[in-house]
Amino acid sequence: MGNPTDEDRLDNATSLTREEAVLRLLGMPPHYLDQVWLAHDDNPEGGEYVGETLYDIVQGEYESAEDAYNTAKREKLSIEVVAEKLAELDRCVLQNANFQRYNCDIVDELAKQDKSELRIDKFATTNLADPHITISSLDLWVLKKYRVKTEVKEVPPPECQEQDKPWLKVDLRDPAPEQPWYVPARYFARQLVKHDSTLLIRKDQLAKKVVQSLTGVGIYKRGNLLPHNAATVKKSFSKVKLS
Image (cartoon, rainbow, N blue to C red; front, side):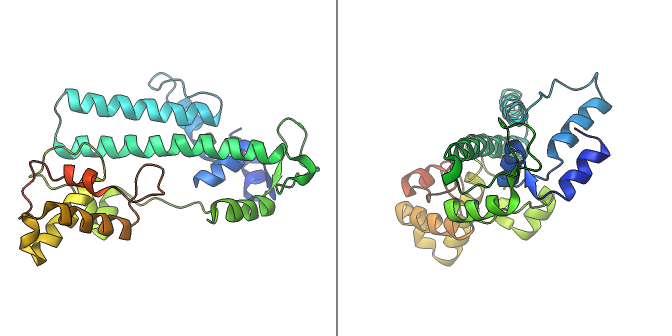
């Protein structure tokens, strides 16, 4: 991988290997692995072993994020740094879970053989153990199974996210968040209290309203499916000045 011929093939491909299909479901660009290996090759003495498969990369990112978060807490770095490391760890946890889910689901679907909704590109397949899946059938299968469209998205830098989404900005008055969603939960709590100060003494009701606000901007529990529990959200208010 990593040579121009491979990139040309991916740019003009009508089918993908199973690993490339998982990349597509994760929303990663088709050259993701090439870019990781290239960055490592450019600095072979300064980087760690990055592995040979997508699983190696995903697992490695999770372990690095976990180490970075634990180090930030142990060295008592700033609230902003700890929150940033925690958000990255949470992203890696979700990415790891999605990798396992998508990989298993694709394997299970391919195992149906002639009854599989994933169509094999016989012209591109050279190894039956890792067949090429047509992109058109993959996208239809994903839409039917997960009710989402496959889409590779460009993630804006953190400063752009904070400008467009003020609830992602850490308030330096607050204690370090134990979970990434504590930051937006506290933001929405403050906004709600501004309009109704009685919520300061009705924390249960405040937590319920914050859950609605979190859900409104697409912030859910890990797994990204269910809304947060109000009792759990209430914990994010601990030692926080909301007014």
